[in-house]
Image (cartoon, rainbow over all chains, first blue to last red; front, side, top):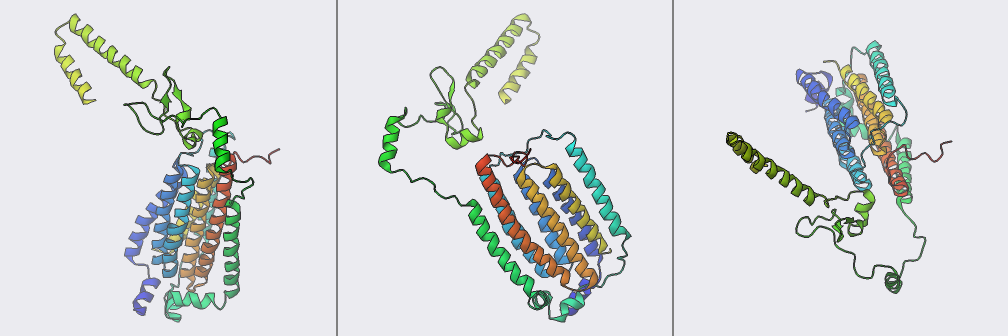
Length: 288
Length: 99
């Protein structure tokens, strides 16, 4: 077992090369779509894909413990935390596409390109031709996890303790940042009822939706004069600006129908020769 | 294949993440790009560990992961509280201290 592991970790097989080129492409595509996708959810999913690919690379590099930790901590915990925050902040919070600083995007892309060229040229210049492989290091204490544990609890034990302090500080900090102290007393039921009687809306708020046509909660109900009433849509959707307006739809439909029938009747009177065309158009409309 | 290719890949991912931090203005996406840069560093550390044949690189990558986890927790808490007070997750809107 150990001998085969050692052999796998000290020589790069053809299989690993194929894996590298295939999954490396996937990782780069995922990273690019993290940067380029307009919606935060899509970015998060692309980043999760890239992280899974990186976990496979860790496993291929002989870092068995880190490969599993990468999947559990990064894709399992951190990316899900990101998705939760995206959900809290609102999926529709897409980036505005107008630039606040003129030419900033191109400058940034140019800087990134230059930085990448520098970095890659630096790696190319370094003399990294031969490599040792992890077989001996992993086998020294009986495995990758045992070897890491040996290092953590002897050489790096102080850093490990500090890490514990860092984690507890981060937890307390996150709790403090997201916790909101109640500054005023909660209103009693009597006070709430008195407030309601004094306000202009004694009965319940009108329901959203347009009778017999649309009953979704994001569609404002219509007032007698046909204008939508924002009061019928719940506060959250109102604040996000996600109210759909369908008040003009019925009239627009009617207008389009009248226009179509007018066209057809006019053409039918004008010439009987185009009857086959008419039939074809009719078929299209039915399909629509 | 030489394991140096892993280093090239790590450099590429780091560059993409850095450009993302400069280009994007949604705070959450900027944060994701920072995570991408951290991951690229981890990949470089792991492949260095393999090249030199000792486990210290992996220990360093492990500590990077722990610090990244702590950083994500605090950073996302800051983004959530910023969103609560300003109703926006754009980094351009947090310009209160601008002259």
